[in-house]
Image 1 (cartoon, rainbow, N blue to C red):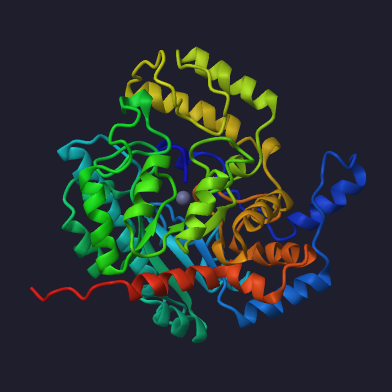
Image 2: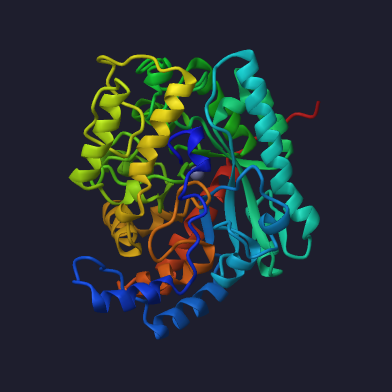
Length: 444
Ligand SMILES: [Zn+2]
């Protein structure tokens, strides 16, 4: 869910903290005034109960990433290494499945740009499918809810492939069928920056995007909704503009997923979902998987906004009230930055948004879950980490710490059935519904 392609080399990507971190924080809390450290270690009996629940449900992380150098050495999936996700950590956290993004950042909308996006998507696809080839006893790429359930029951980690950023299609909708054949079962139209399919909720004005370029979805994007429905691919509405979301919901005949989106009532930014938008996804029968990406979970303090605006002034970029955005959303006074300038600007902004001093806690993340559940009900909410892409909060730093999250849900009174829905049950319902609405393809 990252703000740009430059962030991956940043500091928070592999912010692995051991499972002891919560205990360490609790110890620190004894030494510090309570307002400084508010995170408590989960009670052992709740962790035990959480583990018992996870053994009997399919816990699924609705959105996470892998880096481009994943798959060898200490980044081999079977090694408990610096990645926030690997198979030993999934086992430790009793997470049985994950929707992993074939994520490609938005680049130039040129023939060369599209070729580059395709090459990167193919590279990620190869890395993800190699997990199964190298470790067939530990993990498998799954193509249907039934297959996911079988794989999880066999004790293997189930990988659901999702495309994040339709730029990999360029303007060739037929490419979607090829990705379906390769196993892709979720599709998100945009990331940060508009493309040929849709407007992003974070148009990249600093690189020349026009605000409201397509007025939501392009004609091609609208066509794609039908094709996605026909194939039974779940539409992922995270990241697209409010107009694009409304159009997807009016066109789709299947429920959708917002794989990593948060409440706009808490952080007022178009990247997040307003109460009305949350309700529109509820009416569609869909799911909003609340994202554990710190700067979308917890509003940054005035001091951080000041620092970010200093950086904006330095680069001649208009000031922005919402520091979670790396790109301004107003057209007034925006100057186009060269790729080098943009990278420097973006890196500096992310040093502020990724500052460990401003990191959200697990309790604040669960506050967002509570908020969305109150608005649209337990049947429409899910969980996503955004690990390896800047995601993770204090107390849920990697897949291995997932029982901390469930313990916190238990502490707040969520039942076993509620937890099963949040941790993947709702997603599986939507996936099954999307499959039921698919049309068998004519044989070529
Ligand atoms: Zn992500």
